[in-house]
Amino acid sequence: MKGPAIILVSCGLFEKKLTERVAADVSREFHYPVELRDCSLDISHFYNPGRRQYDANKLLHMISQRAPTDALKVMGMVRVDLYIPILTYIFGQAKLNGYTGVASLYRLKNEHYGLAPDYQLLIDRFTKVIIHEMGHTFGLIHCSHPVCVMRSSTYVEDLDQKNRHFCQRCRAELNRIEEMSL
Image (cartoon, rainbow, N blue to C red; front, side, top):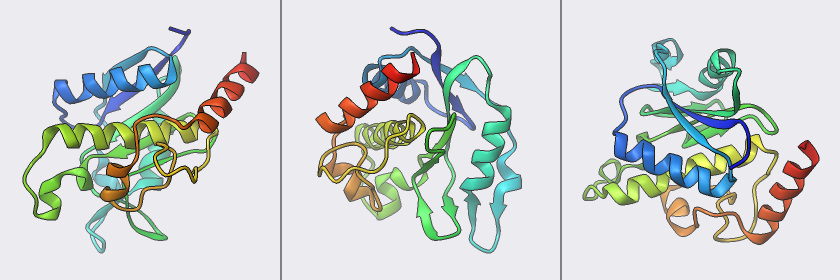
C-alpha cells in the first residue's frame, strides 16, 4: 500500500461490518490504506425544513473545513437524505480534484422503495457511491461506459447496473493522475 491514507469518516452511527467492508473495497480499488474514523459533527445545521433534506454543498464545505490534515482524501459518510439546489436528491457529492466528499446511505436502502431489506445490496450500493465520489476527488469525471463505477447514477437501479470498479479507461486515467502527483 502507498503512503498516506484515505479516511472514511462516519457522521452518525454505522454498523462496523458495513464500514469495514466499504473500507476494504475502497482500499482495493485505490491501492491506498483506508482508515475509519468517527466525527461528532452536528449536521442539523444543514437541514432544510422546506425540503426535509440536508444541503450536501454546505455539509461538504463543513467536512472540508474539519477534515484531518494527515489524510490523502476524506469521505464523510452520513445516513440522511442529501440534495443540491439543482437536483431533487443525490447519493453523494465530491469536489473534483479536491480533498473531500460525502456519501449517504439514505436512498440506498431497498425499504425506501417498498422492497424487502437486502443488507448485502445496501453495502454494495454504498461502496459504489463512495468509490465514485472518491474518483471525483482524484480528478475523474463521469464515464459513459455502462458498468464503470464512474458512470453517473441518478437512480438506485443505475447503481445496481454498474460495477464497483473503474473501467479500463478510467483506471488508466487514475494511474496517470497518481503518477503525475508523485
